Image (tube, rainbow, N blue to C red; front, side, top):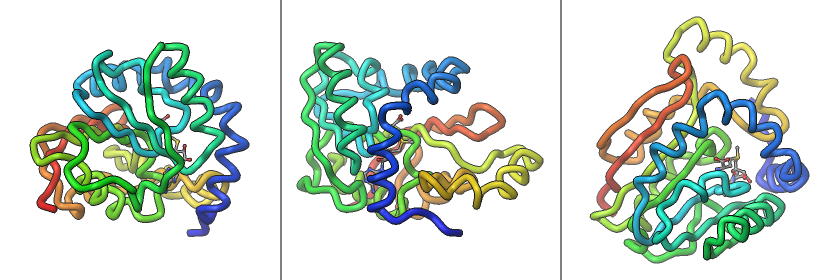
Length: 208
Ligand SMILES: C[S@@+](CC[C@H](N)C(=O)[O-])C[C@H]1O[C@@H](n2cnc3c(N)ncnc32)[C@H](O)[C@@H]1O
């Protein structure tokens, strides 16, 4: 499968940043926003959100959380910063690669990722990094999309996966649960939505 390089992902997301929230409004209204709210209100303490994009989870975090957002795209993070201002939140924002996090081991109480394991070049490495920077008593919260558990829908995704991945690198038929297992993370809860395409997952970090 041909997917964009990291440089191309940055360039493409920098350009797409202006449209991202508008385009995403449709799935958000169909119920994605409700799933975000339910999952991310469970965040607590020192929170890291990786590949945070335009900050669509910000409004769901409890007000007393200390929040750090990272993403490769400066354009996406600029939008997140504006949203943080709108919600009167103090967030720290850094351009950083999710696959090589520049934080010490056991730093965060909650690590969050949403809708990004589809795009990351090395999703299992990224999950291991999330696990490394999460305190052993902490939680990793994932809202992801992947191959449907409905076989007909899954086959439809398979047929169109190449075409879909070309521009933004989103491989929409990935096996998300397998990545979580390969990264050595322990499931606390998992739930699937919308023909089993979306996953809301709560895990414990693995052994560092
Ligand atoms: C589909 S958007 C999801 C944004 C946001 N998490 C959300 O739920 O709306 C994917 C994001 O992943 C970012 N991204 C892709 N590869 C990355 C990497 N290796 N490290 C950090 N961010 C990355 C992109 O820049 C983009 O903002």
